[in-house]
Image (cartoon, rainbow, N blue to C red; front, side, top):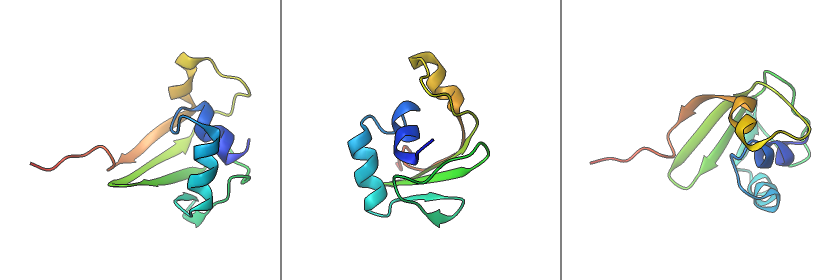
Length: 88
């Protein structure tokens, strides 16, 4: 499955065009290598997405062609999420 499609179907990024733009900007890596939107993912790949304030890393667990909304979170296993952290 293409990287941009996976990001959209897994609901890591809400729109495929946005996922494509993020990949073009060099903010996504697969297995510690910069990745383009058309990069083919395999089960076990580790994807890192850089957001404004941090990064989200996850491992690809499943590649269903048309998952239901409730199956989206089972497509990956979260490794690290520093994008949602706040400091007080």
